[in-house]
Amino acid sequence: MKSVIKLSMLSILSLSSLTACKTKQETKLSSDNTINMYTEEKKYELVVSFFSVAYGIDTKAKAGLDNLIQQDTTEKDFKISIIKTPWGREGEIDYCFDLHALSENQKSTFIEAAKAILSQSEIVHIKENAPCRKLRE
Image (cartoon, rainbow, N blue to C red; front, side, top):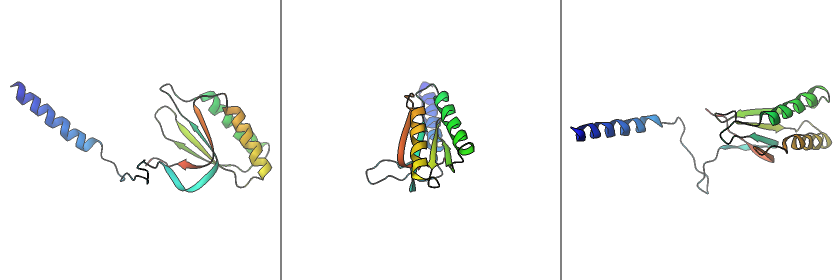
């Protein structure tokens, strides 16, 4: 009787694992056998990743960046294009900044101000001239 129960449970687990992890897309590996999660087409002048280590993102840093964006787009009339890509369960999000409409001086001013705001956080990555993470499907 015990062996029948064990065999039944094993069959159920096997079937559920085969159907539960079905994906819509085929996973593609890059030449170094790592999964590419980023877009290849475009590099953004600034990419800010708010990530979490089991307790959510740094909401103060995110609010500070949001305030900087608001100030620069309304008060300074900066033309900033942003792609916001949520990618985690605890509020993880990437901000990808397309700053091509700004002058070189405006770009450097904005990037330095963003870095100053975000430099106090240990759970924020800042990259320049980097691709943006692909949106989830």
